[in-house]
Length: 102
Image 1 (cartoon, rainbow, N blue to C red):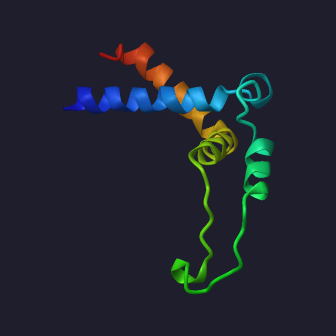
Image 2: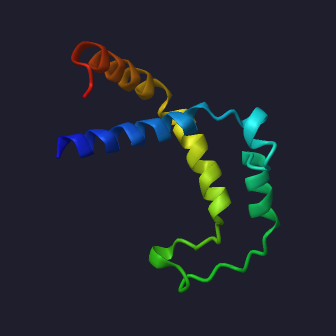
């Protein structure tokens, strides 16, 4: 059971590391996944007037695409997880060196 959870932890850590090292200017701009492109696509969409009965809890709903959500997720991971990832990666490296991992 721990082997499966450990593998799942490694996969999650590798995916978060992959998102953290993506450079917006070099890689993401080539495929049109910049935060500026996401903001302009939100601004250019048609906005209907505020209707207090159309939203849950009085907060108006916005039609946000998957691409915009992914760009925001990558930006959040790069901003918020930078320092914790350093410590987590150092801990995993020390664990692998001392205990041999598997």
